[in-house]
Image 1 (cartoon, rainbow, N blue to C red):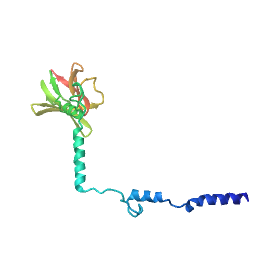
Image 2 (cartoon, one colour):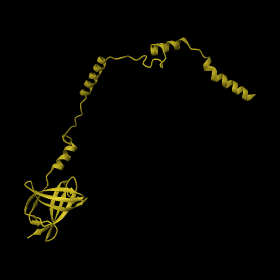
Image 3 (cartoon, rainbow, N blue to C red):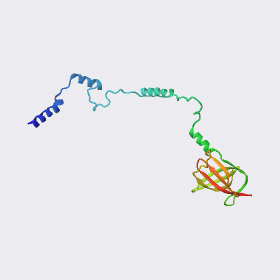
Image 4 (tube, one colour):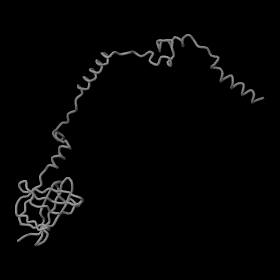
Length: 189
C-alpha cells in the first residue's frame, strides 16, 4: 500500500505542469519578444532588424576610422628605436669576411695561395665543407675544411682568422651564420 501511495503522488506531481494553464501576461510577453504570434521555429529571424547595404557600409567606415585613430604607444628613449630583428640578421648574413694572409700558402691539392687580402666564403657541397678564397671577384682557391659546432670563442658571428699551428702549418678558422669550420694549410718559405 505504501508503494502504491508513493507512485500515485509522484504521478500527480509529474503531471501537474500539464494541467497548468497559460496566463494572459505570458501571452503578451511572447508576442512582444518575437513581434509575431509565430513560434521561433516557424520564423527564426523574427524580432531581428534588417540592415541595408548602405547601413552596413556606413558602420564599416566608422569602424575603420576608429581603428586608424588608435596609435602605437611611443617608447621613451632610443634603446628600441631600430631593433628590427630581421634587418639585423640580414645585415649579419651580408657581412663580408675578409682575411689577410701574411705568408704564401699551399693547399692540400697543391693550389698556391699568395700573400694578400681575401674574401672568404664558406660553401657546403654534398656533405662536404669548403672555404673559397676570392680576390677581386675571382676565385683563387677552394680549400676543404672541417665543419664544427665550436665557435672558437669568437665574439662575432662572421669571422675568419689565421692561427699559427706549427712552423710549417697555419690553422684558418671560419664562422658564418650557416656554419663554423677550420682547416690547416702549409706555409711556403
